[in-house]
Amino acid sequence: MGRCELLVKCRGAGVLPKSTCHQAAGVGGAGSAWGWAHISLHSGLGAGGTGLLTGRLKRQRSGSGAEGVSRVMAVRAGGHNQAEMNGLKEKVLTLDTMNACVKRVEYAVRGPIVLRALELEQELRQVLALCVHPGLLNSPDFPEDAKRRAESILQACGGHSLGAYSNSSGIQPIREHVAQYIQRRDGGIPADPNNIFLSTGASDAIVTVLKLLVAGEGRCRTGVLIPIPQYPLYSAALAELNAVQVDYYLDEDRAWALDVAELRRALCQARGHCRPRALCIINPGNPTGQVQTRECIEAVIRFAFEERLFLMADEVYQDNVYAEGSQFHSFKKVLMEMGPPYSTQQELASFHSVSKGYMGECGLRGGYVEVVNMDPAVQQQMQKLMSVRLCPPLPGQVVLDIVVSPPEPSDPSFTQFQAEKQAVLAELAAKAKLTEQVFNEVPGIRCNPVQGAMYSFPRIQLPPRAIHRAKELGLAPDMFFCLRLLEETGICVVPGSGFGQREGTYHFRMTILPAMEKLRPLLEKLSQFHAKFTREYS
Image (tube, rainbow, N blue to C red; front, side, top):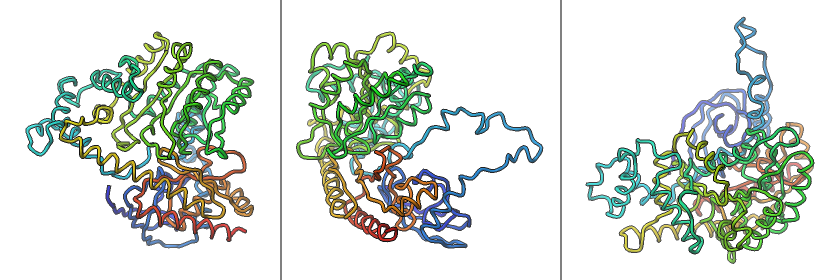
């Protein structure tokens, strides 16, 4: 992506249009005076992570950043039933009559992050273009290995076209390629294509598995253990499904480590009011960026086995590991190497996606889930549940096939593919280190090492007067800080309260995706704002 210009009608004194405020801040639109805003959006900066947005606002009335934050709260006030006042029949579906579970859903980010256009797109785009428009197979502008791949995929499609439905669990040869990928990744441990289901990104597969798990009422309602901080997909899905969210806290003082003693505390406490049935692990972590050690994974598997918990391993950032001494270990590999009874009895679902890693094709919605030791009858029910949605989008399946089965050394595209992949990952590693370094030089900000994934999750100290002011506005303190940051600098980060955090601590999530030449000044500008904010409320 390059740079795009938007001319929008918006309220308020900030540089963002109202719709962008909704997405970036997770609150209502700001302001009371309409005006026109000219917004310039730069590559790699989006509402899902960190953005530096610059704009010129022609407005009828201006205001300070604090006033802009105050105006944000105005839209939360309710109004009279307009239909009733006009003598019309009341609607069947209203906020009072709608599904209460949906109203409990909260989502701190828009979904998959808006990734900048990394250089590694040509191979993916070439094959996808050939599949979408087979006439290009005769063009000399495409390498032969890309043509062979496209022809192979089209042969497996109904009617030899991406416009046809596939099997509900995905195109069979692509599922076989996923199985081969998992086997290579895990050092030769076999993977069965029949245990692999392609999905509309990893999110869709995660929700499907949760649907299978959720049951019961009252004290028998299903409880699901999720890490805090967590990716808001989990809390949102559990609220929608009317399941019980069981929080276990990662240890910030130990670089967000997972402690089995904390798992046991959360489990024992939850059994008093629900029936815990599943344990979710995000590795590498989002938003915390930690990478679990093999010893930790073994301990988690033993714990889940002893406590009869279904394991859900969110491993979508498995290609993003940067810290020296850190290494990705899949739960499937560790489980199998532990041997019986774990390898033969412990139930596991592991998830991967094309939205993350070095490819970042989040808009094409491709992913998969592999199930291990699932009851065959339940697996049939899972197949039925997926068939209700007919099939995952075929373009996403195509991209997944390219990701799990990249060019071979003998292919014309191999050299370019390897060079671009390594360049992307090396740049991310450098930006992860820079982010940690700059933040830890700032009084009042502490940042753990970004071992993996695509985010930092620094802890910030906020003055008591700022906390008090936030409460007056009905905002979480870190939401107040992030809104002021947005209003005054144009930098968009996501408050830690949207991911969960220990009481009395405050954080924000920031992506490391912006280009290096933009990232350093962005970090410095954010640090300077924190110092100014601290002085203002001290």
